[in-house]
Amino acid sequence: MSTANTPEWPVLAEDHPINQLLKTLPAFIEAGGGYSEVFGVTLDPSGPFTTKLVLQKFLRANANDVEKAKTQLGETLAWRSSFKPLETLNEKFSKDAFGGLGYVIEVEGVPGSENKKDVVTFNIYGAVKDNKATFGNLDQ
Image 1: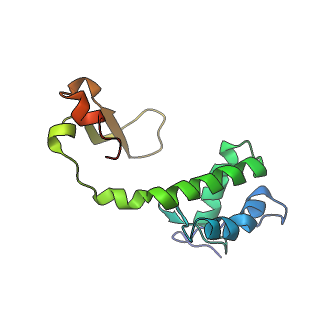
Image 2: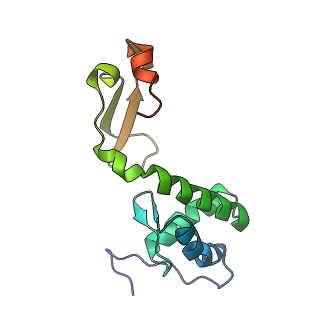
């Protein structure tokens, strides 16, 4: 039984594309050196709601083609395993090179949005003062 805080996925047939992708998850996690995070969700082969939701996104991105979704999921986990995107949250960058180039704001009342508030980002490339300082170091 589901509560408001613990959603449950409806029962799916064994051959449903989500279940097919879920069965391959342990191999992808192992191939990625144990890395299992996507979109801030730790993918769990036991199939909790959040894992199935992420797998559904990969399937939808590939018109429910399980093989294409497997390929994309495997490549995503491999890249995330090497890049470690969650570690970038704490990186510091030079204000001289990047200050004033981007803004993140919350807005209310976005037409067509079901959210009370939405996040909007702006990139202001015209504010670049020194192209080499801003774009010259591809590792930052």
